Length: 415
Image (cartoon, rainbow, N blue to C red; front, side):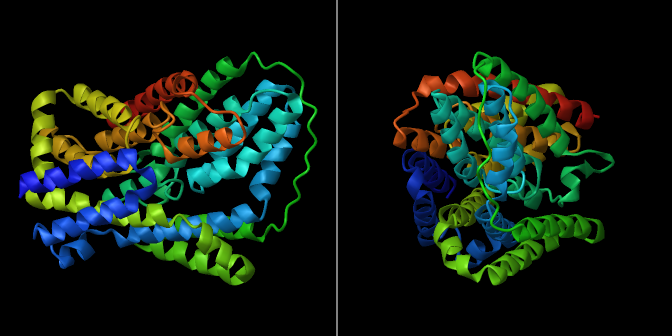
């Protein structure tokens, strides 16, 4: 059973890499094979799925979509860019606003929101839009990890540990992962400034985007407040219901946009997440996760620092080329088991894994969905991005961001 289960997982992973547009179909084909092989049953399929995480994903994404339709994110980006003194700061401005938006919305959506502004600036100033779009993508990938509703990876981790919305900021009497992400963002922002400092032409850009309505912004803020209050009163168990409730409210108020929301919703990622829960659950059921944890434990021995660094940088390397979601979901129980062997709380390895997996995807144009979308938009506009052209920005950004974030996590959680 172990060999067959592992073979199904590895073959599926191979197809995830080369058929990114069909991840959900591949995943559920693998689940069907697992059921037909009697490795798991229908009851396992239902029980392995973390329904609360899926509810958070659906609710948060719908609220974010309606928020995007209001034009408020584009308006804020427009204002910020119009006040930039030169092209370099204009690029940094769109990267900054991308990071802020991605804390509360999906990374791909963030790229799609800010990209038109970046193209408009680049065209007006007769400069390449490539640094704009690459900067937008990598900034959104990093900041999305800082909150419960910012990225599917955050939702997975929150469901596994579990931690609630507030505990991303303050957890067990210590600073949460949000502040480690901000340290990485600040350090990597300096890298972007260094890379883009040569763009010294002045910006003569007037804000032109008009806000349709501020009501979706109010709904988003109310959802964040509700999540924060529920965290104080209870915990993550209510987060899915809260997100779904505000999604229903958004759709009820903006019924005219409902069809567009469902048409543009990221169904692929939703079904992919559900299927990955089942696939990783099957690995756990047959004992592969325990075997992997044992191997990892043998390598690191009793060296806590080595275990941490290995978890962080292995995650960075792995996520640079393949999907971080199945990797992270498989490695979380490994981190838990290794922590038990070391006699430490698991949060050090959990947070190190998340930082490595979320930021590692920034190294290459295929490491994250936001990168793929950004490169696709550039190609469509006649500016194809070469692999190493992306790496020139993504690699130094990733190294500095991971160093800063992982150092903060070590000092906070190693004792």
